[in-house]
Length: 230
Image (cartoon, rainbow, N blue to C red; front, side, top):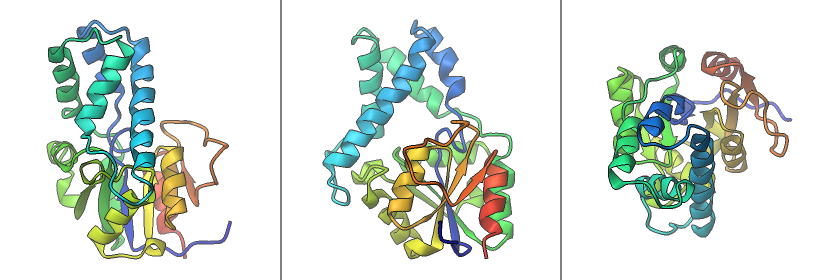
């Protein structure tokens, strides 16, 4: 793989990268949903997001659906549409109360200390990301919070990454994504970005995708690798 230059800005994925979803498990238990179905819910959430990305034709806006719509739809799918609206609300509320990974502040701070610009990019609305970052005391470390879903441009379609390029006024070759999702590195790499993958979620990088430019055991190591690029 050709060596990439050191980026001017790092763009962090939010859910399961900066903020783990695993603590939602108790919300599922309270709703009477077996814990084994949480993984299926996550899979359905990704499936439907990817379908919206595809129906957006890569760069054009796709169907007008919110991230909350996708969360609720996935919950209804896995429960055979037996879940109460109040239980759906409780799980969505739980997503707004997630705590960051222990090294999240250090990773964001290292990028800022090195003079790089920092942003986040997710398929959820900016209110969710801003709320999570503010609650964790991390919002001051982030310059731009970019929401792809509300613009009907869903990751990993190219249009989602273009939104971040526009928000930061930075060309793709000067941007790097930090994510725990192999599929996200595939999308960003296809858009011309440098990619940094943290192994804390998947453990092994999915073999179907092109190698990320940088790998790390956690967010700190991934950011350090990106900062070490020439």
